[in-house]
Structure formats: structure tokens, C-alpha cells
Length: 305
Image 1 (cartoon, rainbow, N blue to C red):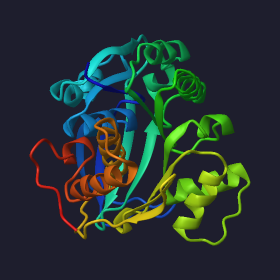
Image 2: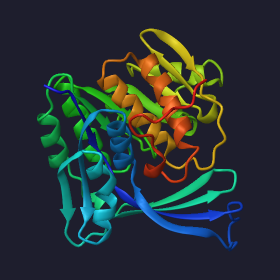
Image 3: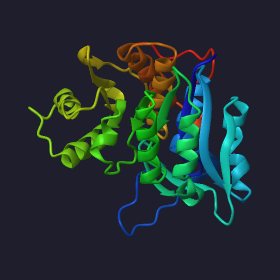
Image 4: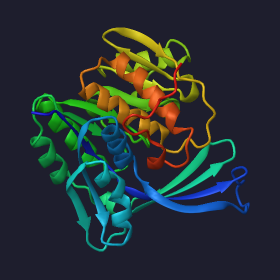
């Protein structure tokens, strides 16, 4: 039987605006763009994993509005199983308003809409259907109680959990320790230190990741943008460098990384090998505009080191 990646998460429509620079508080700028594409951290990671060859089942919710079709179109085209995506009556499909500056950096405001209805029951029912070798992938854009219930149910059933707490939320400590790996960017890693009341030996990414792992999490991956990633596992602490590329839009690059990482772990790679592949997928994504439209498909040439 084919091993599957179960993704429980958000699906949005992304509305993009481009600006020379990000506005100051109270300032109005004239921008460009206005295009609308599929997004949402859960859907992004599900698509990235599917495009890297994983068999993916997605659990989420859309509204009963015209945006629902756009939000799911890329997942459907990639062959993701959408049978467990609910339609929330009276709710809008999630919306992300994304502003991208000329240097490629972005700001994002997310309106959850139907994502707020992704329930504990839906999540635990999906987890109960997981088979040996399947992996659960979670992020932070659906309700906290849903994330925690899914992680605990998967851990109790001896299923591997990949947890990307983005955006950061204060999950219970026992939930964080289900993650293998816990995937965080540098900002989220600092918030994890504060939440867990940890003091690393020094301020380096390696020391931060080691401190979080020392609190009981089996493995930790901290993404470092153009600098790659650092990981801590039972094999020790390792640095993974990223290819040097010219970024045009960083939107969704972290999701490209996490989805690719999950796909390679599902295929049997060790964490270091999976991370090395994932940083190349992330580097590919930042060279293209948008989130889901930037992800490499089968046969795409990934940047080399």
C-alpha cells in the first residue's frame, strides 16, 4: 500500500499587491498586482509535497462562495485527495492579503474564514484512518484545539508528526514534543524559546535548535532563509546550506520547504537528506512570484549549491 501524507490545515485565496517598499504606519502607497491565486499554509504544503511525488490527503474547509473553487484548483490538478475538505455554510473561504516589496520581502494579513471551522472531529477521524508509514503534517492556521487533538491522536497511534507552528501559537508542551521534526523559522524559534522558558547556550541558530530539542522534541529544523537551515536530531546538529539565488518573492517559500521536506521523509529519506532537498525547493520557489504558482513540479531543475 502506498504511504500517504495527511495534511490538516488551511486553504485560502491569496490577494497580491506589489509595492516599491512596505508602507509606514498611516501611509498610503500606490501599488500594482491585484492577482488572486490559491494559497493557505496547509494547502501550500500539501501541493508542494504532491508536486514532489507524495500521495497526499488534505483535510480542511472552504466557504460556500465562488472563491472555494479557486482555492482548491491547484490541489485538485495535482491529484491531492480532497474528499475530506468540508464546505462551511455561511462562511467565506479564507483570504490572505499579501504585500510584496521590490526586495522580495512580504507582509501578510490572513482572514481565516472557513478555516476556523476545521474541527477536532474531522481531524481525529482523518488521523484514525492513517496506516502504518503514513505521516501527519500540521501548521498553525487552523484552530489550536484541532491541531493539538490531531497531534496527540497521531502520536498515540504511533504515527509520525511533522509540526510547522506557523504562524506561531502557544501549543501545549506535550504537543510540541510529538513533532518529529518541529519546523520553525528563526522568529518562531525565538517565540518557542520564550514559551518553553528556555535559555540557549548562545544566540546562534544551532544553539537555539539544540535548546528546543533539549526540551523533549525528538527533532527540530530551524529555517534560515537564504542561509539554509539547521537541524537537530539523534544524529546530532547539522547545518544545511542553501543555493544562492536572486529572490523575487519569498511568499510561500517556507511552505515549499516544509512540503518538500515531508515528501522526502515520507519517501524514506533521513532528516538531513530531506532537509537538503527541501532547501533547494525553497530556493526554487523564491525565484518565482506567488506561493503555489512558484512551486516546482515533477522534472523541474532545482538550483544547485
